[in-house]
Image (tube, rainbow, N blue to C red; front, side):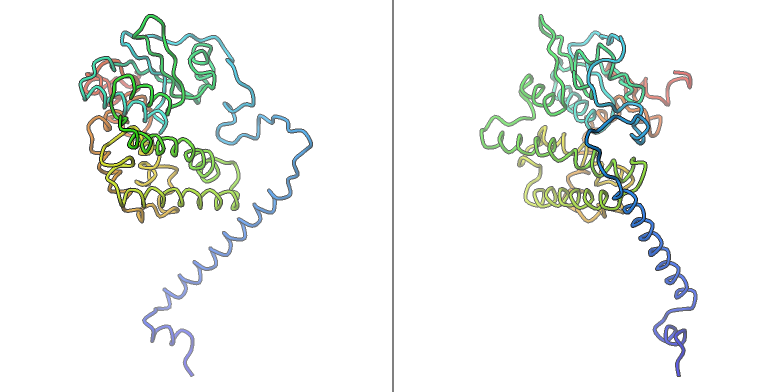
Amino acid sequence: MLTRAKKHRLRGLCVHCIETRRQSRKAHRLLHRNHRMTDDASSAYSPPAVWTWDKENGGKFAAINRPIAGATHEQELPVGRHPLQLYSLATPNGVKVTVMLEELLALGHTGAEYDAWLIKIGDGMQFGSGFVAVNPNSKIPALCDRSGPTPVRVFESGAILVYLAEKFGAFLPTDAAARAECLSWLFWQMGSGPFLGGGFGHFYAYAPTKIEYAIDRYAMEVKRQMDVLDRRLAESAYLAGDAYTIADMAVWAWYGTLAKGQLYEAGEFLQVQTYTNVLRWTDEIARRPAVQRGRMVNRTWGQPASQLHERHDASDFETRTQDKLAPSS
């Protein structure tokens, strides 16, 4: 009679391989059990009749999340010499706007010169009185256009993109059908992004406990969104058609980063490499010089050469990145 080990050898499997498989199955069972235990613990929670704010229960962002709006302290915003004043951080939402501004400058729109001021959201700078005056929602990015007699505030990244596109007549089609397609994809991102960031990103990367139901729920939705994009980009060079628009800038900042496995360290988990049309589009946009500059602005992580904490002049990309500044800067 053949032993199990002999049977495996006949099929080309060594004893070490067999043991490795056994250990892998065991680890998977333990992980699954731990997930279930976490879910069982979370399912024991019963919401009270009236919710109350527990400052110690906010996970990674407990220090800055709160259920009320308004300023927490007095702090005026700095103002530079350029027409446009941007207050931001190089999160995907911030990158949308700096990419747009750099693209406008690349087209020769000198009126798009801007000062980009760093807002450290982890330190609560978005709750300063000056920032709240520009954006009552206390979220980056926020823009103040000082090119006219009366400053104009614009907040929400999608609104800023439309404002700049209309102001300079660029990256937003004028043909009715093409314009509708562009705006549809822009607002698709604005509506879909919270499922990726506040949903999947939060529960996968930031929540104090791993909840299998929540991660599965949002992973499924994010993969569906990636499939939506992949199908669209199989039939079109860009999201709105043959032309590169603000829709691409908005979606690329989030889903292009995700497609390269650079968001929440979730590339393998979501198998992002399978969305080949999204990857083709992502790589094409990433090669644009204006995009490469835009993603550096207000960036405070990654390689020092990729970090331009503040941008006040085009020459800053050559002289003011973190690798060129003294360590104390």
